[in-house]
Image 1 (cartoon, rainbow, N blue to C red):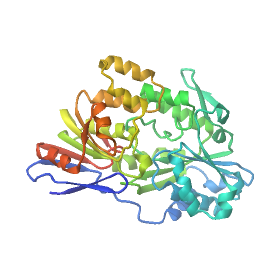
Image 2: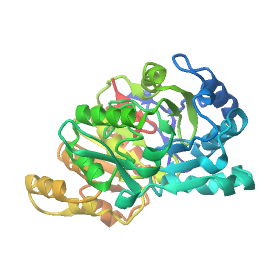
Image 3: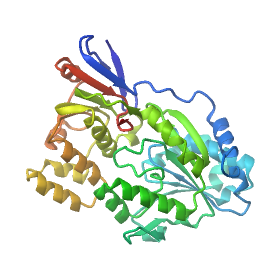
Image 4: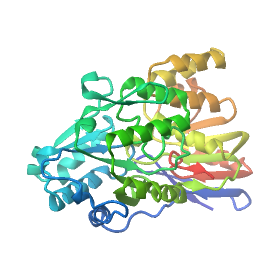
Length: 398
């Protein structure tokens, strides 16, 4: 038996379990969208169920902000299709359109957009990268139930119409803030992002995200369900009410797999460099742990690169676990949530990492370094039961 597991930008790992072993494979070859993105987006924005078509809620003098969330596959093509719809179906001027990227990683799509858009449109619209550290670029929106202020990107708050582009993934995913996760906390200030990443209270995070979206007046969204790698399985655009009642089921159907505990779980993180993050590593670990027997082994295949972020490097400390956990909570870095999850799991499982990182760095934080694909098959040969999950950073267990 052979199973091809894709990881990184273009690599494939050939796994060779035997017929005698118990093997479960999930999310290995998810069907990708096989028809034109442009037609799909145009049709969706024109056929909202509980709301007028998008072209009927924007007017010639309106300012339009398009927010670009995290991990959206083929995001440059998606943006290009949305802009085509706006140009052909509305009277909004390109000069009144701003595309706001969540961070520098997502803004890598700007280079792809330059190749897709005509020169006039490129020179007319504005592209902005959200910076959570610049207070002048933030505006007060509302307060949480606990009284903490919610400040969002000023361009989004000031715009007449906001159209978010979001990835569609299961709500139970580690670090996920529900339906509006690509607005809050992505476009808030650093203090709020750190608070979000340290508390891990899914209910309050989802509530705050909904409140922020409501106060922002979001009426339409574009939700993109990923397939493997950087492919699109489904893209749905429409009013928030309709999408909240339809698209979560699509994510669960694609990315939720049955609980099948195994001695060895192997997962991948595929896609371009900006998908190879410690956040995604922690999400993959968290999901795979639910399918791994206590004391079992978890292997993540990725193209993570160095240097190690501060909270991750902090895992090399020889301090007692409880003391290290307290120090991590105080570490002001966006990778704190990933570090805390690694710390939680490495005491209960044997964790292995195939990556582009230096082997000494990997070993220093308590993970076993895998130098070659052959080592993964050696682990397979000694396991009675095996679960293999493609793009484990997107997958959850029922």
